[in-house]
Amino acid sequence: MKIVVPQINIDLLNDIAQSLESLDSKLGVSTALWNPQYKPTLDMFDELQPDLVFIHPAQIDQSFVVACQEFNFKFIIIGDSWIRDAEENFVSLPKNPSLVMTSPMTSKNFPAQWPTLSPRHGARVAQIHNAKFDPKLESEVLVITSGVEMKGDIETVCHFLTSNYRTKIIGSNGILSHHYLGDVSIFERADFIRSSKVLIDFLGAQCWDAQYLRTAPVCAQNVSPMIVTFRDIASLSTSVDSLLKKPMAYQQYTDACFANVCDGNTYFHVVSEIFDKIGEPDIAQSLKQRIKELIDDRNT
Amino acid sequence: MIGILKGELVHADRDFFAVNALNQLTKTSTMGTLFCEYNHGNFQLPVETNVLQRIHAFSYDGILITDNLVRCQDLLHATYAKKRFLYCYHLDWPFINDIKFAHIKTVMLNDSIELIARSESHAELIESLFKKPKYIMEEWDYKVLVEIDNNE
Image 1 (cartoon, chains in turn cyan, brown):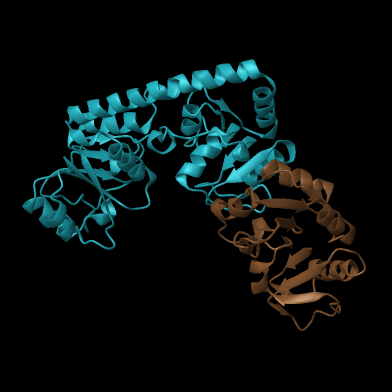
Image 2: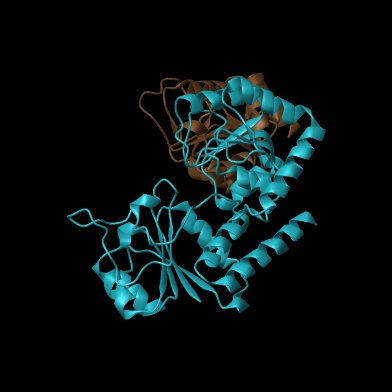
């Protein structure tokens, strides 16, 4: 099966592509990244003849309509809203998508007859599985700034952490602090998480990676009942102190977190759900099998 | 032999103290050399020691020290240098735009480059983020330069 994933600024698409790419090639699944800026839609269809295409509503144009008529493929839409015409009716296509990936709050922005699935975060196992502890990257507390607007309360929290713990800050959004060490590659990021005791997650997206790598997450969002959360500096301080000073509690928490993430909370599981939903159970099963192998490897 | 590697000499505290230390070294048994691109017109302290173009640092076989993160990349290629030091005079990496950890780690976590801190508190910070500085030297104190020359 040839699968095409557009290279646009949506993390979920990268995570889907990485999970598919790490499947065994004997399964016949090949994944290609498509940059719509450099390769027009019809050229991509002509050259790759894909069986499945992930697409964002902003990429839908007349050439995609032509492709729907000329080529035999399934497609999955990822976005917040569908295109409407001048009378505010939904624009129709020659064929319907196999799935729309949108949050429950935005599903009303798509035709009701299209099947939907709510995207969710998981551990980016394809990126982080081989992470290693590196004493040079070791820290008590790690903050990752990518995707986080570093101002206001968040800046205050960072300054509290740097003043009270051995803290390192990494990521694409800079903060004026000596503890900020710059942007990192996906593999450096994984090693930083593995080499840290506690990860502070402002978004509720990075905590899954920490759980997989047995680093204790402390989250600003309520993403899972078992993950420690904080609402203010006082509760953050209590949680971090407790994790750093009580090794037994730390061990129990990280073990429970690892079990939690392995129980259906990796991107392999997320992508498997997608393929189950579009009637491709073989690929869905292969993804589940692959993550089982990786978890067994991690356990040994 | 101590060589101090600079980009340009400007009328700023760290360049002033560096040149002052090199001038003091001329009164000791430690030979000092300044490697720099050029002397900015507003630098007013007389330089009373050897001054060579930066390019000569690559064939220098003494102890090379720089206080500049950018120039520190040169240290990686100064293969004849007996020892290489980065003097973290200003903790200036947060002020670099779009900084990448790959750039920082090349120098700060490089096993062949030792770090020098300017104070105890700087040393603590540098150790917590990178590695333990080998020396603490306040404002290019020439006595510490002599100590480095004797120890290394």
